[in-house]
Length: 267
Image (cartoon, rainbow, N blue to C red):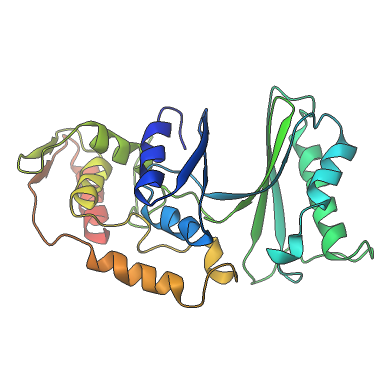
């Protein structure tokens, strides 16, 4: 999640009956059944991405150790041999500071495991879903993560045009949550720009899941019981409140107001 929003993200997870394991800067580690992964993707208003932690290690300060850490994962449980895999990395205060090199070693270990070190390659690009593996280093601790969200969660799908320097939907939602808005009162945003805060306020008040109308990477995997996520979406729709709320948004710029109207209509 974005820096400063960890406490809200933690509460979102607890609300879905997840067990919090650890909270770090921009990271909330939690445990639960695999169905919890789908629930957090659907309902998190402030999260960036939901990852499955496939492996972790301490003192990962050379590439041989990193290779072994990645290779030891049972990748065939998660990844289709004929689908593309993208390796991404972030390194913070780590001995392994070159993210391109980390990505290269991570990808090599995955391909070696998936092809039994036969020397064969996996697809680079096709029309199949993409698996994104994220190697996250903080100091010399390494986490091998599988992105279940796909695109960042703040991309709800309603914002056709946002103008210059837009506020992320996740941060807008956090501002609404932190405002302690009493729903019986009017909600005002006098400098609404493309309308993101006002839209997120309505979605929050009416209990509309932020991920209701978007696609997630895990939807094409075999991790969930068949039909589970479709049922979860329908259940979420049934929980939307029909009540109306007074949300007033304005701006001095007529051009961005038109964008706000379009975005509101989309939402």
